[in-house]
Length: 224
Image (cartoon, rainbow, N blue to C red; front, side):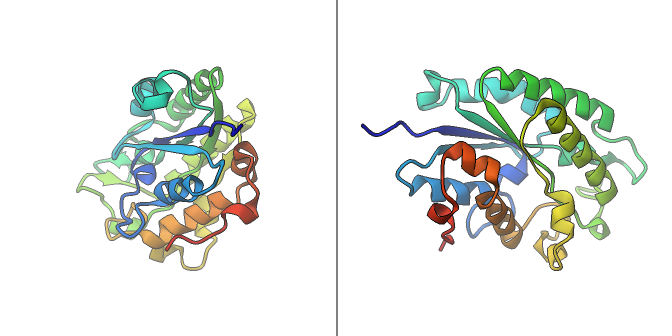
């Protein structure tokens, strides 16, 4: 008897949605295709909404899986959470108030992960770097790598507190020589190369592979 496939819900913003990658639809879509081709690969529900911050994700996470096919009869096996970049943006000027303060972000993230953990496994990703020279975004939002680093630290510390797997993105991305070439002309969204880099990191992330019960040799096949 074939075991039922595990189900992974991926929640977040345009980073999850795949905006900026017209070639392959973003890292989450590439992961979905890869896993779909495996006999026991998890089913992935990509639920990224452009512009969402932590508060919007927290308000919709439960309803999202309650109205989707087989998830109406059960909760997903795990949630992969990727949100925070929009919260870090400052409004009106580089010194304006953030859309959500770092302290409020950490408090809300702690509450959200704590609640989800009661129903499903949780995995969390960091946030990508930005091109500060192209700010402001949409003529009013100022993203910076200083703020991105602060918010990713809040994510990491929260995951440590709650014993949840965390995949760092911000500092890891900036350590790559060509990282600045992975960003769209708007300064904040990843292009196809950036999404592919994230995809490759996920394929080598032990917590995700262990949860999915997959061997790296099964899945390290490039999307064509």
